Length: 417
Image 1 (spheres, rainbow, N blue to C red):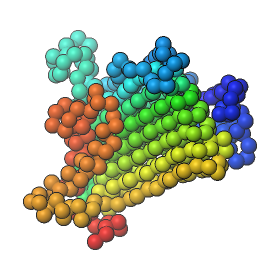
Image 2 (image 1 turned 90 degrees about the vertical axis):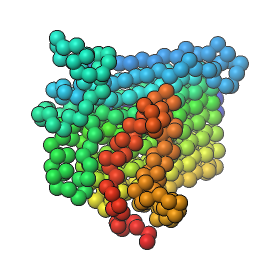
Image 3 (image 1 turned 180 degrees about the horizontal axis):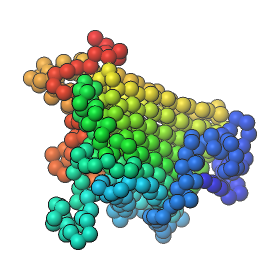
Image 4 (image 1 turned 60 degrees about the vertical axis):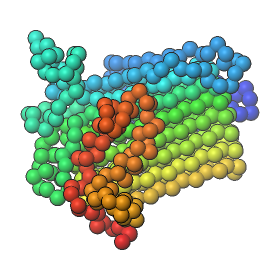
């Protein structure tokens, strides 16, 4: 992936080629330092470029008032990019690409979704498979015959112009639902391993460049799918003065899944701000890894950045690794980062139970509140409500398949009492 910067015309701009010293992880696109900056996503992006057969382009023209106003113009609603997979298909590899270019002074809301559908076979109408339209939501695939594994290797490129605003939501709900109670039931573990989507893999790389002064990029990444292995990588480069980035991430993992979230927020220009909040909810016998990196170059003075990753382990069989990283070369910055790993708060459970709620209801309320902190940053066009249709309801349904059953409580090493 080649990232270029035009020759410097102001003190705020620093060409990437000038940041190739021994203490910098950027430089020529084909150098080892550039590969380090990509955190292992370069080979997947190259594979996407070689085999990509489907490209979605979102091009928002510069606003007419961009030269006279520092505020982004109002957008016309969200643009939805939906990648649909036939849950009864033969498997195979898919390498979709999405390109988002937002001109100076404009704004855009982009919603990317990866979902399962059930397509009617040839000669069969949609009414024969249920639902409406050409594709209907797919039921559970756990009882269907095994098929060859599938691979989703998506690559998304975002460019934000001067005084522009982009609100980007990426939601993965593909792969069906995991098997519940695998931490204590051997039969459930066998059913999970035999699940059709257990052998499937999803890779998604999002590369965003705030390439204009005062540009703003906000991302909400939700990984709640049922594939056996997933990795979502997000990198944001703040290349001009006054740029800002806000990243919220949620990983829900259950069954025997293996999931990973990698982020890289790169401060290159001075006077930029970034905020990142990550939530990991881990149940069953699954494992989640979060690697969050913030890099502040020497030219990025007066940077303000904060990062916090919070993880909940729902039982003693689940695992999580949180690796926050803060690399600062500048000397005039305000940066914080941290990570917490815990189970549910006994004090909060006691408070709710003292108000007449049973332990199971109290625990579920805490978990709903935990994931709702991130889900509220998703575009409202797909969010819905917990009682109606929408993402909130579907997240609640998936949550019920990864939390421990009945009155069981966690007695792992993180228990405070």
